[in-house]
Image (tube, one colour):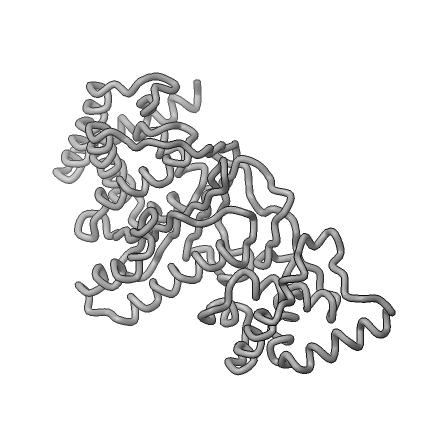
Length: 362
């Protein structure tokens, strides 16, 4: 799955009516049945980690084609639709307070395997992905929705969303393609536009900056203060932030220095370990980025990493109202096809697959 197309996600109020949401759950279950039957559980995770495919799924199951609720409602439906017994996949997390309960839900779902190691690994993935998108990728969007879908063998994908005053931005992660939590970790970011004020500490272009930050922590705050004073003496100027940094002097406050002192005691060996340290947030990471550039000349990446990406009608009647009869027929057709396929009759499923080739020819 490659990213293409566009996706606008304006903030909308309201929620899916009960009659529609119950059908969204059943249709999501039927779609998942077909994908898992044909390609396996890992392929479903792979598709959910694609912003384009995810947006198409949200449209197919009948939610608003472009609103922020397409993320939260689609993942809410999948959380009820997917099961380890039927699909080999569990979903934890959700919107608001449900997102905070993600670690407990992971532990609960892993308890059936009595695997504390698996639960710990998934909790770390959940925690670090959320921290990266809230602290290392400083784009002005505050996370309010976090979900992780995972198999009981340890594969996972994360779909989470942040918002500013008018729009939402969705972030996608997949364990299959992940080499590092802090180096170009996303499979895609769906957003309404490029932002001008984005500090991206996890891009490939920030590699040297991340190394500089780890080195700074090892130096200790007292030595850093002396190095900064020495630099100011050499330049003959007071410390001033270049306009392109879009940072504030408060980033070098006494609070930041105290945070650096605590990090120096921990002595993290990598940037990922640094980010994972409790108490290290956006301000501390900005301060370290600024200090690294000032002292080592390692520039930060200020380019927005967002990619422009993006049946049954929509909840608000766009492009047309949802037809309950048509929706129910789709669910019935998919369910009958998967049941007959299990019995050895694959004609219906193969006919549905042939439709895809017919549409391509059109």
